[in-house]
Structure formats: structure tokens, C-alpha cells
Image 1 (cartoon, rainbow, N blue to C red):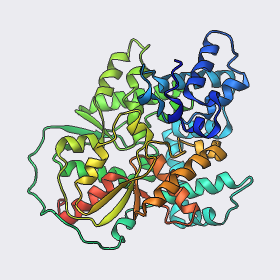
Image 2: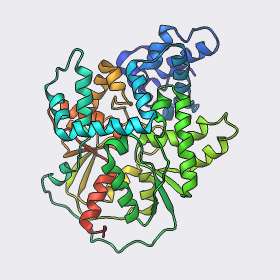
Image 3: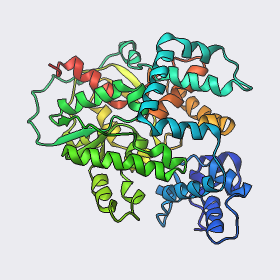
Amino acid sequence: MHCGFCLPACPTYNRLGDENDSPRGRLHLMQAVVEGRLDPEAEAFQIHIDRCLGCRACEPVCPSGVEYGTLLELARATAIEARRPALLTRLLVAVMGSAAVRRSFFFGGRLLRGSGLAALGARWLPSAGGLANLRLGLAMLAASRDGTGGIRSAPARATSGASVPAADPPERAIRIGILGGCVQEGLFARVNAATERTLRANAFTVVAVDGQDCCGALHAHAGDLDGARRLARRNIEAFEQSGVDYVAVNAAGCGAAMKEYGTLFESDPELSARARAFSARVRDVAELLVEAGPRVGAAVSCSVAYDHPCHLQHAQGLAEPPLTVLAAVPGVDVRVVQGAAECCGGAGIYGMTHPDLGGSIGGDKVASVRRTGADVVCTPNPGCMMQIGAGLRLGGDRGAAVHPVEILDESYQRAGYYR
């Protein structure tokens, strides 16, 4: 492709001004490797493919529908075959690939967070030098704490049209299995709990699904497609055996990955059809809630700075459903941040592997959030919650973020829907 419509949508190109750091430039590099004109070990290929956030903001603006996200994952798989990835990336893939290691890792993280050491480290460690990445990681961990306190402590304001709680909705014969996830279950179990409660309050039947695993998104983004397939296979088998009608996902990156299992297994004669059928049943929790209404709850008086996760808006094409969920809560003043369509700079561990560029992109996002003057920041993806929350915290602000279902859950609790 030569049109260049993708250039102004690309965060790295906008900041670096280098054609090689645009989607069009990276596609040219991929083509050069495929045609044998460029060695995949070459610095040009390795550096510019690695610098991509994978935000996929280029896809909606592409007039020819180039599936850049899939091509990027294939390019990264080619890149790591030629040269080992950074140590931090290898550690992440190893941790997320083992359920036992993952549980231990997040248990330690929760201990650090609960003890207050994460917050202290984020406050006092130097912002430059060898400890800067540790400081950012601790700030992200501290920012994953319960952010709903910001909703409850928000200054009271007048509300209009506060609803009277409605009668219970009619039962639906729709069985939902919720993806527990890795980061979500490890650090944001409260979001999973709120997801289950709000779905039940909207008359869905929630079924426990044993044997599920990490969605594999982080492996795929890092180029470890075999690892991603191994995890995806477990999820396909687990949710098939559960007999659920839909798979509910409350993390944008996980939802995007699971909706593309069909592509991940397209060359596997055994699993390709099953993977496509599985992906067809995957829904973001906001999609399910909007399909149900959602049920309107009691008033929650607060202002919310809402930011679109890249893998919800660009990869899944879902910008409105989370806003519709928030609109079901009387008293909430939703303020979509300026530049909400641009990545927050998190992109998995991008902020730590690319501290300068990721920090610049993240800094712009945090500045946009601050300009809203809202009580809390809200975004439906754990990585974005931690990235934006860390940026706020490092800048001296409260530094916690919430998921839209948490605000709806608070509204339902006030309405007395949970008995």
C-alpha cells in the first residue's frame, strides 16, 4: 500500500517522523524480508518492527483493509527466530505461559501492593537511570489497587433523572462463561467479580469454566505464536466443554486476541473450524450488557474521564458499547478524553521496554486525562488502567483507574439489585 492514510494515525510516526516507524514503512520492511531483499536479522527490520506499539490504529483508516495486526505478529515471529528478544520480553512470556508461575508472580505482586511498598518505591526511586523501569513497574502495580474509592469519595453534585430501581428483568436462557485472564485475575479480580454480578443482574446465567488459561495475547504480540496457540487451544477446549453460549471478556486485549483465534489456527486442519466457531462466541462484556439494555441502576454522582483502549476501538471496532454502559448509571458525567483514539503507550510492557517513546506517548495521554478535571479515569483494559494510573501517580495524582463495569456494579449495589 502507498496511500499513507495510516501515517497520521500512527503514534510512533507522529513522534519520530521516520517513515520506517509508520505502518506503511513497516509493511515495506516486511515485504523486503519476504522477498529476500532484507535479512530479518538486520537492524532496520529488528528496530522498527520492535518499536511498533501494535495499537492497530492504522487498520480502521486503511481503505484496503490491510490486516496489519496479523502481519505484525508474523513479522515479530520472524524477528525472534533471527534474534532473541529482550530479557524482559522473554521473562514475561515465560511467566504468562505457566499457570503455576503466574499465580506465584501475581501473589507476590499483590503482597507488594498491599504492603504499600509498591507505592513507596514509585514515590522515592529515581526517575532516571537503572532504577527507572523498576519505579515505573511499581507505579503500575500501585495503580492497580481498587480505584472505586474515587467514585465513593467524589464530591456530591446535583443529579437529574435519577432512576427508581426497576423490577427484576425476565430470565434469559443464555449461558455465559467469563474469561478469568492472567493480569485480570491476578491484579484485577474485583473487575471479574463486578463483571459476574452485573451480568447476573441483567438476567444472564453465568457458568464457571474450569481449565481455562491465559488468552495468549501477550505471547502473540511478542512473536511467540506457538506459545499463543498452546494457550488458545486450552481455552477452546475448556469453553467448548462448558457448553456456554458466549464467552465474556472484560479486557480489550484479551477479547481482540480471542476473536482472532480463527486466524491463529487458520493453517491447522484439526482446529481451524473449532477456533472460528469459538471466536464467533466471544463478546466484550459491554457488548453483552448493551444487548440486554443494560438495566439502569441508582445514581452515582461522579465525573469520569473515559479513554478508549486500542484493542477495543481499533481491533474490535467497539467504541460505543462501554459508553452505553456508563450511560446506564444516572449521575455519571462522562468526559471522553481528547485524543482518546490514540494509544496510552502501555501496549503490554512497551512502556518499560521503550521508556523514552512509551513515556512520551503515555505522558500525552495523562495530560489529556488531567485536562478533563474528572474524579476518576475509566478504561476497559487492565494494561491501560495500569499505564494511565501509573502516569498519574508518578505525577503526584491519585493514580487509580476503574473499569466501566465497576461503576455499573456500584450503581447496582446502591439500587439493591444484589440479594
